Image 1: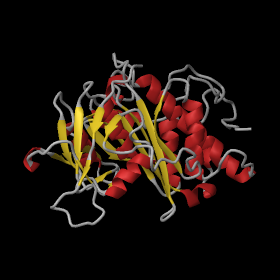
Image 2 (image 1 turned 60 degrees about the horizontal axis):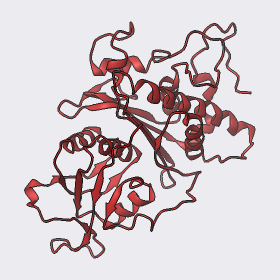
Image 3 (image 1 turned 90 degrees about the horizontal axis):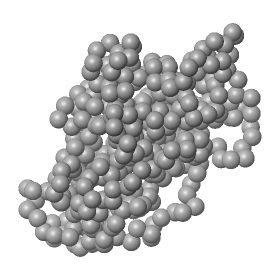
Length: 350
């Protein structure tokens, strides 16, 4: 899949309007403040409508001036949705970013947001951590075909804090089922996103564990065709709307791309239980999913769907929340839907 390079142009200067001593101000050209597109205060699943409205405003053929003076926080969903948006822009389009605070620049550099982009004015190497923190973080990265298992392994380390070599049996019972569910989600994103002629779609992931509150946030985002297009003729789809398509996708096996089996085989064909299981795991560990597709988004700990009218997401965006400390207390294997055709219905991860 060819990458359509988006050029981000940055340059340090100092704004006379800013009183914060370490304020970093970026931009290659002066522009009337009324013509600039303003970042919201956060790009996160705390305010999905603001996130997707902002990303929708970036679309179009012309260069864009962005005012980042209000931006204070970007979570993994914000990183992945913004980067997937940039990938859809015309080749050579330039984003002139002004007034971005120093801590936000450091965060974007640290999370590898600029990897693969042409950037002026920022040393995108300084501040990187090539060694990473595998038990705390998975930096933003693009997922290619055949990488689901590898990426799922990285994500599970950041979610649970368990790195390769940890062998405690009790924690392994937590790690392996979640890793399976994440692999299912990635397989679905890689396969379903490319339907309806969206062969150039891409999948992005990021994950961050916060020591301050013990919360894990993980994002899996694609800029493909979305749930409604792939489930349009599915019998579980109650109405042909994006909201109902999301609800249908949360039902076990709706997104399955294989026939009935008697086991959870580890291969490229999935059982269609990834979204269902991750939603159950998140809820059991004190969290939830935020799922957006087309003109709708919902939070799985609520029955209500919300509109993204005027700022739809052409693809599927999933944000996973949970409390890491609660994961060991969850009987995660029991949350997996029963295997079709299995006489006793038990699932083994031995």
